[in-house]
Length: 329
Image (cartoon, rainbow, N blue to C red; front, side, top):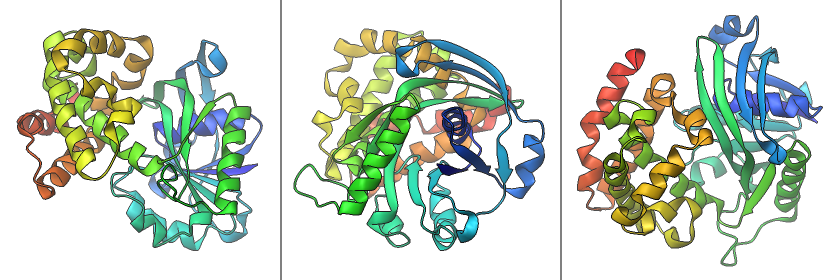
């Protein structure tokens, strides 16, 4: 398959590498001012547990780099892996030049689907979320694949009778097969829009904890720090629930459903695991602006819905300081 990965950050690079190793013709689209960074490729230092194997990957990745997309390029799949705040800006241009390709949104989504539907038909896109991450510092990507990928229909909630067109369902099945063949474990979620909200909100709790501790690794050393972050996460889940998400059934909401005093030690041990550490330990240094945007989006929605969130708000100065101190973290 001819694949264009739109975005040369961690998620885009990891999945471009994985799909190219699976035999697909992959290009990475970057801004013109970023081309020089890719002249010699990028060094990968990845823990890869796809296919229930544990592999340490250390190699130089040199993908084909492009700076635009044209309808005549023959691209069959566009993997959109830019920051969630950039998606509304790039989507109109992408839609005009898409041709017959399917778009996989492989990034955060807190806004919902209306802004996507204004540019693309339901038959043109699939929603997704990576089970991978890391950081790129000094042109070295340190990160990990957890092994899976979450996919869902463009129609939002099919769990309660939402309809999905035949072509949209075919696209979803085709992408699930594509990633399965590349060694991933696809997980199909019936209400991907709400799943993405919960995932976004759960991330906010770990952003808060890491910001206050001045680093994810330091954060996960302390039961008290995790306990406080779980309180922030509970408030974030209340915001999701107020938006209509079924929080109690969401996997990523589980740490925030039980009392923090009960689950904090177990959650800390989970976060101390090798995969979370490889994915998150340098994120505050690599992408502080993106982490701030996630936190701020949740706060703004909570304020609009009039949700009490004293714990979340108490982290405001910490998250702002994380952005200021990022070069020294």
